[in-house]
View 1 (tube, rainbow, N blue to C red):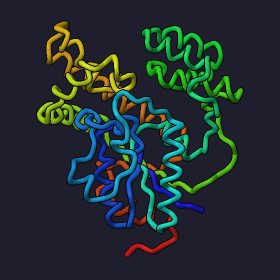
View 2 (view 1 turned 30 degrees about the vertical axis):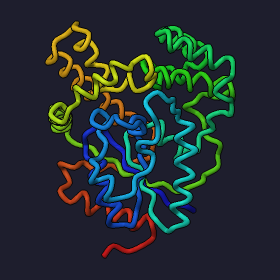
View 3 (view 1 turned 180 degrees about the vertical axis):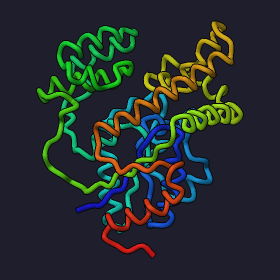
Length: 307
């Protein structure tokens, strides 16, 4: 069976750096599991690896879409499975790196995400509600049709709402209960975590560094094209700056909002992976040798020996 390693955990904990080291040492290639890094020209706010890092190790599912294109978890699942299968035939280790929990769950649990086409009439009705900013109606629909998913998914994310409603209607089962029972690959999930205050400091520092790198210009680009960018406009690091560009708030307040939302997102990520998936956790502050421990455990998972 195909062996896959996934690196998960809250934002800013160091997943990308670890992924690069492991890929270089274990003859691996990286598959981004992030729902925003797919977009071209959105580099700083999505925390993509640098051009040098992207060149050092082959990366997949990065810069594959324009920001005006829609991209679903089903698109990710299909593309990622194909890439993983190809890498396995080349005797390379697939390394899924990223923080979007439901994306990874779609792979690990081989979720049945429904087979309806995007142009189905009911989907267009849902999309129209999203475009008109009626997220409360989408939330009400999901709460009525799938109360289980309503309690567990991010109901502030209109894409998640639409997908959850679609899956319930097309399969009759909640999106959080989807599993077709066929295990197509063997996954080892490496989870990085840190003490809360240290993680929050890392998040705050990363936001400050993003600003130095040109986040405001990138966010202004998204703001100027927000009507054309249905998904990117909702990304953390962009949407919080819209009031600043509109003259409705000062810059410091907007940056504080990015840091706050990033911290909340990190908490949601950790909660999701801890409660929904079988993860082997490593605290990067408590375990000074965590990288060596991870390498040894991956070698055991792969059936090899560590040098």
